[in-house]
Length: 257
Image 1: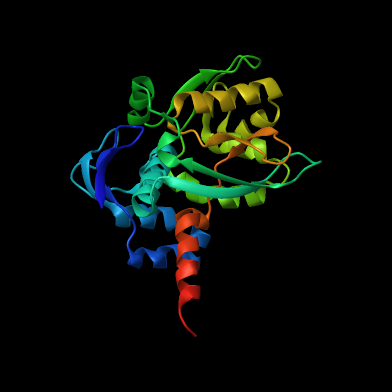
Image 2: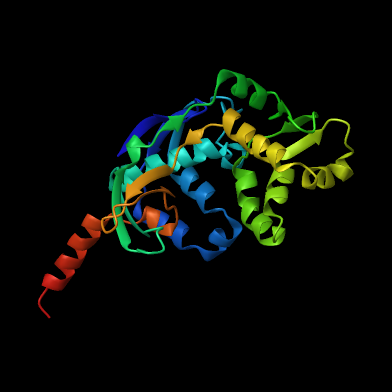
């Protein structure tokens, strides 16, 4: 089954669910280590581009490394829904220290809120992926960029090497210029920011970006506490749902031995 989807930036195309041959992508350890699984999976399931949106893909195949994170994740959600259905079941532990019960939860992937890329942001992205803001405490203009698939592949190594300076490493990774600051001094400038400026900058990243809101509210069945969790996204996301898995197990145990 295939369908036409429109991603948050306006990128539009025909996408299909996974086939058996795509299993090799999910099980390829080399791809997993390099972060290339998402690119390979999207390239396999994207059949046709109807509207390239802000990208220069009109007469050539999509380079998923140049596509914004918000579009990539939205397309992945649709691939998963086309493959196994929109219902997605997962389990997490209750966040209450006094409880820690296992919470079984199910949601409809189509109901996750989607934030489109604004016209202003689309123009800035098309004009070199440079976004400007002014830090409230430092009073300086700062230019930053939205993250693409190519950036996404670098994030695991960045997190591993950042140690206890993850915030400054992530900010430095996205900030491309600071008014009056030499590029060689940019990292030091960022480490000297007030937390108010750092928090403001992260909010600016989110304000101009697009994507799918994956923060959901769930309730513990034991202590009835409500809590916010991020939608679990790992290899099991592309596995059959709980109901289908149970049916397979029931069928396999019903065969005579």
